[in-house]
Amino acid sequence: MNKRLIRIELFMFFILMSLACSSVGLKERLGILDGLIYFDSDHYGNSEIFSINPNTRIVTRLTNNTANDFGPFFNSSKNKIGFSSDYEDGYNYWQMDANGENLVNITKKDNITVNVPRWSVDGKVIVTGLVTKCLTDSDPCDFEIFLMNSDGSALKNLTHHPTATDWYADMSPDGQKILFVSDRSGDPDIYVMDKDGTNLTILTENNDFENMPRWSPDGSQIVFVSDREGGDWDIFIMNSDGSKPKIITTNTSNDYDPCWSPDGKWLVYVSDYDGDTEIMIMDVNGQNQRKLTNNFDMEHSPFWAPEIKQ
Image (cartoon, rainbow, N blue to C red; front, side, top):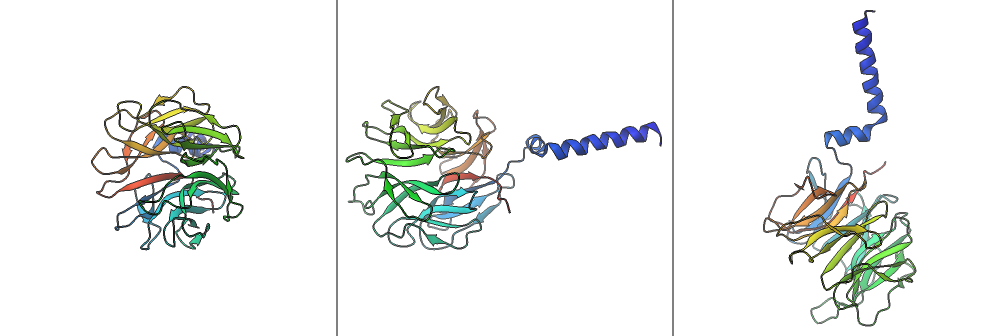
């Protein structure tokens, strides 16, 4: 065997070994993003749940009914999608398989509104904003933060505030802390508390509008929305203790509904920069902004789920 052939074979061997040991690195170099993004859209007249592949932009419809289905989220430990729906009386919490089959009403209550429910990472409990009215224009919408088992049992009120509205909750990756938004200080601010409702701490304390907080996958940071810069909604990232807030989007549009990618390197969000709402992605520094949807529909509540393990 000549030396040139040996060198070629050695070169190919090291290439193959590199690919075998660093598939994630290869995906990054090729710009391939893992997972699927779930969102709701009024494309067919009412709000339905869809998924979109961030690489191919192929959209799949997952719910098909006359109800309003919104706020999807995914739990990889169960391979289930959770969402809110008025398919039956009230806005209950529902779940279904990743392909949209086997719909189950979990809360099964009349005269209820469930706001943006979120599973714990282990899939055992769900945290959500919940109110037993708010179904008509005359109903008060004073949400409280509730915790319940994944089957809807053991519903527990964690906030018990008589006049404030507490909503948009999210559980930390280690299952020990809960983020939420409250107007108890006079305007919407972001708070954190222990999973049993104790040790309440305010993370943003100003006269601005803060909303939609989400833990990073490692729990070290929080992405959120604020109008503190210029009056329109922008996306910010801060440390988990509320320190060092940093603006990520700087434009004249409203950017909101942020959610981390599973690896914590990207954000999916909604923007109205072209007149309607579109699903967008960008890296955590606000660079490499890409539009995933491009239509005249109203799209909201994107949730970036990891690749489903069979």
